[in-house]
Amino acid sequence: MLKEYYISKDKSKLQIENIKNLMKQTYWATDRPEETIVKSIDNSICYGIFDSCNNQVGFARVITDYATTYYICDVIIDKDHRGKALGKSLIKFITEDTDLKTLYGTLLTTDAHGLYEQYGFKRNSENFMHKPRK
Image (cartoon, rainbow, N blue to C red; front, side, top):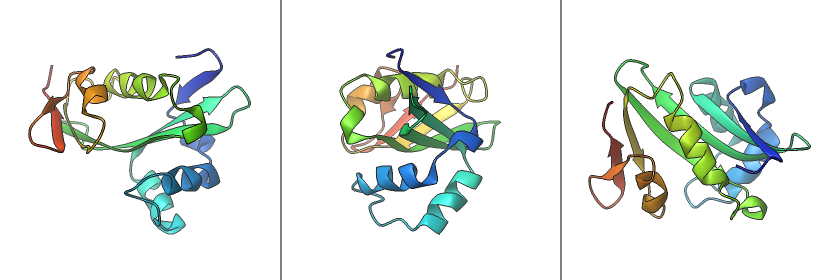
Protein backbone atom coordinates (compact mmCIF):
# COMPACT_ATOMS: atom_id res chain seq x y z
CA MET A 1 0.00 0.00 0.00
CA LEU A 2 1.17 3.53 -0.68
CA LYS A 3 2.86 5.32 2.21
CA GLU A 4 0.26 8.08 2.28
CA TYR A 5 -2.47 5.63 3.37
CA TYR A 6 -2.98 3.45 6.42
CA ILE A 7 -5.58 0.92 7.61
CA SER A 8 -7.08 0.87 11.09
CA LYS A 9 -9.58 -1.28 13.03
CA ASP A 10 -10.05 1.51 15.57
CA LYS A 11 -13.76 2.34 15.44
CA SER A 12 -13.13 5.73 17.03
CA LYS A 13 -11.37 6.78 13.81
CA LEU A 14 -14.35 5.93 11.57
CA GLN A 15 -16.00 8.93 9.93
CA ILE A 16 -19.73 8.30 9.54
CA GLU A 17 -20.22 11.08 6.97
CA ASN A 18 -17.43 9.66 4.81
CA ILE A 19 -18.84 6.15 5.18
CA LYS A 20 -22.28 7.41 4.13
CA ASN A 21 -20.68 8.98 1.04
CA LEU A 22 -18.82 5.74 0.30
CA MET A 23 -22.08 3.79 0.55
CA LYS A 24 -23.66 6.15 -1.99
CA GLN A 25 -20.97 5.05 -4.48
CA THR A 26 -22.16 1.42 -4.37
CA TYR A 27 -24.95 -0.43 -6.12
CA TRP A 28 -25.96 -2.32 -2.95
CA ALA A 29 -26.14 0.43 -0.29
CA THR A 30 -26.88 3.69 -2.11
CA ASP A 31 -29.90 4.47 0.04
CA ARG A 32 -28.83 2.84 3.30
CA PRO A 33 -30.03 5.05 6.17
CA GLU A 34 -27.48 6.48 8.61
CA GLU A 35 -29.19 4.66 11.48
CA THR A 36 -28.60 1.34 9.70
CA ILE A 37 -24.98 2.24 8.92
CA VAL A 38 -24.29 3.11 12.56
CA LYS A 39 -25.99 -0.06 13.85
CA SER A 40 -24.04 -2.23 11.39
CA ILE A 41 -20.77 -0.61 12.49
CA ASP A 42 -21.64 -1.15 16.16
CA ASN A 43 -22.13 -4.88 15.52
CA SER A 44 -19.19 -5.59 13.21
CA ILE A 45 -15.42 -5.51 13.04
CA CYS A 46 -14.73 -2.45 10.89
CA TYR A 47 -11.70 -1.48 8.87
CA GLY A 48 -11.03 2.01 7.59
CA ILE A 49 -8.48 3.24 5.08
CA PHE A 50 -7.24 6.76 5.77
CA ASP A 51 -5.12 9.17 3.76
CA SER A 52 -2.22 11.23 5.14
CA CYS A 53 -4.70 13.91 6.30
CA ASN A 54 -6.68 11.24 8.21
CA ASN A 55 -9.64 11.45 5.82
CA GLN A 56 -11.39 8.10 5.47
CA VAL A 57 -11.23 6.88 1.85
CA GLY A 58 -12.09 3.19 2.28
CA PHE A 59 -14.16 0.90 4.43
CA ALA A 60 -15.03 -2.75 5.04
CA ARG A 61 -17.01 -4.66 7.64
CA VAL A 62 -16.66 -8.19 8.93
CA ILE A 63 -19.33 -10.12 10.80
CA THR A 64 -18.04 -13.09 12.83
CA ASP A 65 -18.59 -15.46 15.73
CA TYR A 66 -14.78 -15.46 16.32
CA ALA A 67 -14.81 -19.27 16.44
CA THR A 68 -15.72 -20.71 13.05
CA THR A 69 -16.77 -18.22 10.37
CA TYR A 70 -16.52 -14.64 9.19
CA TYR A 71 -18.38 -12.74 6.48
CA ILE A 72 -16.79 -9.80 4.64
CA CYS A 73 -19.16 -7.07 3.47
CA ASP A 74 -19.37 -3.42 2.43
CA VAL A 75 -15.88 -3.30 0.92
CA ILE A 76 -15.63 0.15 -0.64
CA ILE A 77 -12.81 2.38 -1.87
CA ASP A 78 -13.66 6.00 -2.70
CA LYS A 79 -13.85 6.48 -6.46
CA ASP A 80 -11.15 9.19 -6.32
CA HIS A 81 -8.70 6.78 -4.66
CA ARG A 82 -9.21 3.67 -6.78
CA GLY A 83 -6.41 2.21 -8.88
CA LYS A 84 -3.88 2.46 -6.05
CA ALA A 85 -4.17 -1.15 -4.79
CA LEU A 86 -6.07 0.01 -1.70
CA GLY A 87 -8.68 -2.72 -2.13
CA LYS A 88 -5.92 -5.33 -2.27
CA SER A 89 -4.29 -3.89 0.82
CA LEU A 90 -7.60 -3.89 2.67
CA ILE A 91 -8.44 -7.52 1.84
CA LYS A 92 -4.89 -8.60 2.72
CA PHE A 93 -5.17 -6.78 6.05
CA ILE A 94 -8.50 -8.45 6.80
CA THR A 95 -7.40 -11.97 5.85
CA GLU A 96 -4.23 -11.61 7.95
CA ASP A 97 -6.12 -10.27 10.99
CA THR A 98 -5.27 -12.53 13.94
CA ASP A 99 -8.97 -12.62 14.92
CA LEU A 100 -9.89 -14.09 11.53
CA LYS A 101 -7.00 -15.86 9.82
CA THR A 102 -7.86 -19.36 11.08
CA LEU A 103 -11.60 -19.05 10.42
CA TYR A 104 -13.74 -19.98 7.41
CA GLY A 105 -14.29 -16.81 5.37
CA THR A 106 -17.30 -16.02 3.20
CA LEU A 107 -18.48 -13.15 1.02
CA LEU A 108 -20.77 -12.24 -1.84
CA THR A 109 -19.48 -10.39 -4.89
CA THR A 110 -20.75 -9.75 -8.38
CA ASP A 111 -17.68 -8.09 -9.81
CA ALA A 112 -14.50 -8.58 -7.77
CA HIS A 113 -13.82 -12.33 -7.86
CA GLY A 114 -10.24 -11.82 -9.04
CA LEU A 115 -9.43 -9.58 -6.10
CA TYR A 116 -10.63 -12.08 -3.52
CA GLU A 117 -9.09 -15.10 -5.27
CA GLN A 118 -5.66 -13.50 -4.70
CA TYR A 119 -6.25 -13.95 -0.96
CA GLY A 120 -7.42 -17.56 -0.95
CA PHE A 121 -11.14 -17.21 -1.64
CA LYS A 122 -12.71 -19.70 -4.03
CA ARG A 123 -15.91 -19.44 -6.04
CA ASN A 124 -18.81 -21.59 -4.85
CA SER A 125 -21.31 -20.13 -7.30
CA GLU A 126 -21.63 -17.06 -9.49
CA ASN A 127 -21.56 -14.64 -6.55
CA PHE A 128 -20.68 -16.61 -3.39
CA MET A 129 -17.06 -17.18 -2.40
CA HIS A 130 -15.42 -18.91 0.57
CA LYS A 131 -11.95 -19.15 2.09
CA PRO A 132 -11.17 -22.50 3.73
CA ARG A 133 -9.83 -22.62 7.27
CA LYS A 134 -6.07 -22.87 7.76
